[in-house]
Image (cartoon, rainbow, N blue to C red; front, side):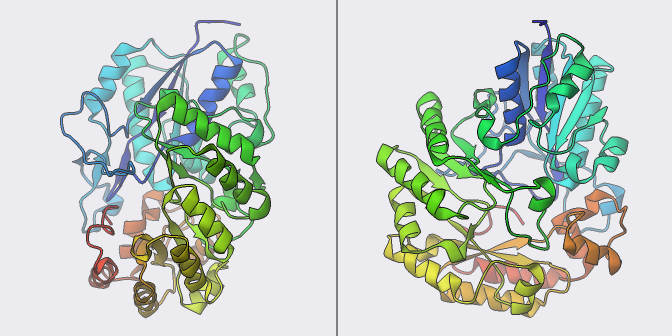
Length: 457
């Protein structure tokens, strides 16, 4: 096998009206890096355009004790399709000169791998591809991630990548490497389950103060607005002992103190998954903290789960209520039942959590959603002593909500993905006026002015 292949992995900039480092890390790309480490002797270089801790940054950025914080940003011209949105548009991440400086420090790559999460973040890929071409010419560029999986044709046409890879990379990415790089590339290794895949190559990250943890992939639920079933055909869970060993390794290797669970369904099948996982964490007694940014299923939170969360040092809890409007819950296919939130908060409070530090997700901008229902949901959460956390609906191609959006002509089937932007869709769908949105934000912030505005919505 050739020892001279150089692979460059890039996490691109975000171009958006708003962006915030909500424990955001390119986990899929780092899993691919770990596979390359295991099966090849290739040299790997990584550029994180979203690195908030770059050693050469000129401006200091604030960081919360749990690792969250704002990205560096620079205002840029709005794309023409977004010209009527009355908000500033920015590039989030490191200055482009730092990207060029990094390219000067590494050997010419034989292959470039790029990821992208939101469909409407594709301008960041375009800029990376343009800068790579400017520096190296026709080096092969492969794009993977959520955008590539959900919108492969758009990505092939507009991203600037040579190859668009759909789905989980471990399934057959090695056959693609062999096709591009020739006989010196690895054999066709194929991983069928997440359990088999080696732990992510977190050593490539410039800062490891916060790391993501993925204990499962997919979701057994089928919410009308969620892309999880489109990205993962099956729901699978890792063994609890493997997850705990990974967490302990990262703590001891990198002194990481904060871990964010990336699961869409962390509490599903709890008796054989999260409960033994938490018990083992407690037994190992690691001085680390845990966070649940993707939201927890309320109906699964009982006295045992709440007690284990507290003993295992769960610090930031985000609960998925979405709405108290029964019409919204029914339409969305929600897994929330009446009374779930009250019961969950009682269990959590009895276990030592403080209600005013518990976040409850509420959705805004769902097609057909009544604004009065959003207001009522905010007041309801506040009446229970918790923090209402507004999440803004973003259209996802292929979901049930997308079908309705196209049918009602909010967006065309082939609309520019920039119009999937959660801020843009709020304005363009006319479901929520700017005045109503401002009123909802102010109501949700309430007594929590310092807690509720960090995402910059």
